[in-house]
Image (tube, rainbow, N blue to C red; front, side):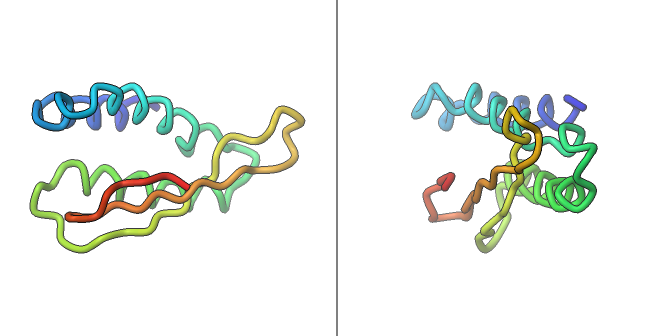
Length: 102
């Protein structure tokens, strides 16, 4: 479950200019990935599939410094405490685009 998280963490640590500018990047990314990881959504197969694809896209973006274009990714977060409703989060990434979470 945490393999992708460790990969992202290594990538961010390998880019000191990123961690120097924003020391909260790694903890924020870790928290976000734990919220949207496909293994956290066993009762929601479609959301699990969407998150699997989008986590892989986000990891590819972090891994490749030559990633071109931008991506508007939809993630489903862990269900609310009552367990019936998924929450959504959108992440926009791209070279020359400030990453943001809506």
